[in-house]
Image (cartoon, rainbow, N blue to C red):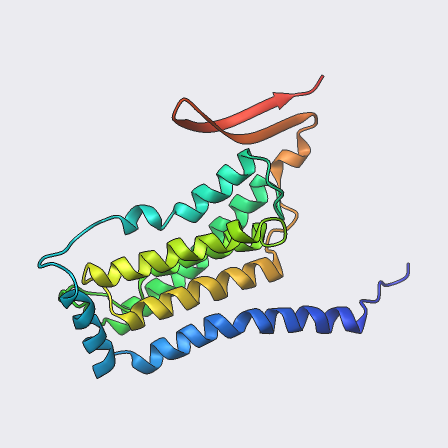
Length: 226
């Protein structure tokens, strides 16, 4: 049995890609750490609040956080070519969120930074972490077939970050670090592809299962080929 030799150029190319994709999240985390608890951070937050009406409040970011996920499954239903099938998409989405949120929660508990509205556990932003995790999954799935769709998730994620500050729940540093964690973790998940071969539906012959939408209801569509 002859061992398979992986070309050196291929290894270098993969290493370059992961390093290249690490620049943005590392930069976001780095800037967030630098300005954390700084005068600039506090002044920036006050300026945002002062630009809005008194007692401004909205919960729109609770929904926008998951907009990239909805985009992904709607694109699947529309037949837009993706990197993975819906099951692997869901698998990597779950794993990415599991690790990114886990890291964020660990930092929150160890840091115990107060929120602008005097609440607890401000740093980093959990909403920003989830929003940018979801946006990065969307990016990886569609950046080759539909770049506009792939990048649009980041617009929703950035909006989530803004509203977390507008609602006086987070500082800019909280949002930047949360965003960086979400992007970095998801990039690593798509690089290493944990549980790559796990798909119980592969063992079921002649059966196809897809997410479906009909009459304002979401569900799964299953078909069996005789």
